[in-house]
Image (cartoon, rainbow, N blue to C red; front, side):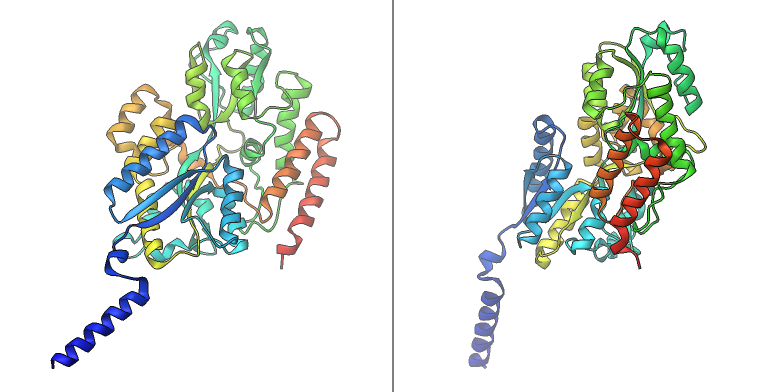
Length: 423
C-alpha cells in the first residue's frame, strides 16, 4: 500500500513538472501585455497606467504591463506585427473598424466563448450602437471601451454678435447654412468648420442623407448614390459656393481654429472636448449633430480585443482584465479624464459620472441620443478604402473634379479593391 501511494505521488509530481514546473512556478502571476493608444502620450497615458496599477493591486495572480503604443494606426500595426511574429499582445485597444482586418489575418479571439455562466449576456449590457462594430458572422469579437462621437461645438459669443440665440444651435443642414450665412457678421474668418481630411464626418452626412456606405459584411460599397452626392454637395455649398468653411481641416487644426475664434461652429470628436474646454477663453456650447433626412451619426474610437496565441490561463486572465477596464466604474473614471463617451449605460449611474454631468450636461444629452448611433464604416482593406475616399474628398472640395465624376471614380476604385472579397 505504501509503495502504491509513493508511486502515485511520483507520477503526480512528474506530471506537474511537465505541465509547467514546480508548484511555486505555477503560483507565479500571469503576465499580460496590453497595448493602448492615446492621441497625446502625456496625461492620458499616465491615467491609463494608474488604472492598470489598480487592476494589478486587486488581482495578485495577474500582472498586466501597460504599453503606450502611439496613435490608433500605430497601435494596430504594432499589434499585427507582434501577433504575426508569434508574440501577440494579450489585449489591445484598437479602432472598432479594425475588426475585419484582424479577422482576415486570423489574429483575434471570439469573445462569446467567455460569455457563459455568470458572464452570460455580458455584451448585451452595452449600448448596441457601440456594439455594432463588435459583431461579425453572428459572433462577438471585441468590447467597447474608449468610444467617441462627432459633436457640434459653437461659440456663444459669436452667436450673440450675429444676432443668433446662443442657447439654440442649428439642428438641420438647412439651419447650418442659414446660421453660417448669419455668422458672416461674427468676428471670425469662418462660420463653420468640419473634418474634411478624414472620412468620419462624411460618414455622418451620408447616414443623415438616408444613405449607407457598405453592406453588413464589408464587401460592397455604396458611394455612387444620390445620398452620398447630397452629403458632398452640402460640404461643397459651404466651402465653395458660400466660402464659409475651410476646404481642408483635420481634428487638431479644427480645434485650434475654434479655441482661437477663427471659426464660430465646428464639428469635431467628443474626444476633443477636454482640449477645447481647456483652451477656449469664451463660453461655448456642445451637442449632437444637426441632421437631414435622418438624425444619425457613426460611432468612433477604440474597442478591446483579445489576441490568439495565449495559454488558457492567459486567456482567462485577459478576459478578467477586459471586464475590469470596461466596467462602469473604470469607464466613468476614463470619461472624466479624457472626454470619451461611456459605452455602458450603468456608467451614467456612477457617482463620478453624475458629478461630471453637473459640470458638463451635454453628456446626458448624448446618452439620450445614442439610439441614433450607427456602426462606423468598416470594409475589408478598410485602410486603403479610407485613403481612397479621403483623396476624393480633397479633389472635390478643391475643385479638381466634379462631384458626380468624383463619386463614379471612387466607386470604381473601391469596387476593384473589394473584388477579392466578393463571392
